[in-house]
Amino acid sequence: MNSAELLKTISFKLSSVGFCTVRSEWNYKNIISSFTRLYLVTEGEAFIYIGTKKIHLKKDHLYLVPSFTHCSYLCTTNMTHYYATCTIELPNNLSIFQLFNFNYEIKATTEHYEYFKRLYEVNPNMSLPAKDPRVYQRMSSKTWNYSINDVERSLVSSGLLYLLISKLISTTKIELNKGDSNNILETIKFIHANLDSEILVSELAKMACLSTGYYTRKFKELTQFSPLDYLNKQRIEKAQLLLNTTSHSCIQIAEICGYKSNAYFCKIFKKHVGQSPGNYRKNPI
Image (cartoon, rainbow, N blue to C red; front, side, top):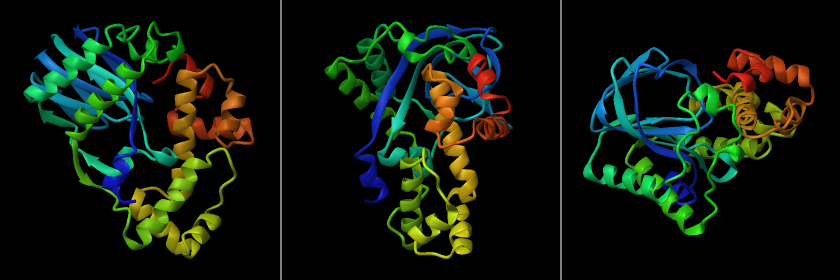
């Protein structure tokens, strides 16, 4: 299955959609969300900082912020906009952001406005429970005052998100049917499907029919991470999602994410996120 074919299996889970105006209170630093975010600015302006990159949010532009991206928000005047937050799922828990490069800012068209307006209309009670991400991310999505169990509404919402996201894809990052890359992708699928199990780099290399050293080198070329760092990154991102959206204890989450030792889980979590799992749940950054 190549990258284009894999897109046919994608699924979306909308967590919020709304239309609002923010002002100087929209000033939050070092936020990391387990949800992908879309913004369509209709009036005014604001800024998002992703790492050292400053993105000017302007009228009539569509913006994408991938899940698990560190960013800061700043509005000095006012900004009126549509927004949507969602999770994007592929088979084996692969990330669409691993497979494709995205334009994180594009000029909005009449179609974009129609898609967002329709998404908002079919989900009238799905606005965020608070503007401050440090507040709403501490709230389990089960406690938010909405449900998207209606089949028709769910399908329409998924279709609209598909249309919006598809406009932002620029190029393929990983070509799934090319030699070693295909073999390594199979091990990436294995990693995502078995995050709760013990995974050894030597076993992954054997699965890819490559020596451990060559596998590690090619894996890093493909993903920008060593196999072990990649494994820990995926486990910690899953832990962040569970901390944000469930009431599982930290010990339970450690086990679900493949850490037999809670102390080691806390150590790795703090290394990646900058604070302990308990503090993250109280005040996600």
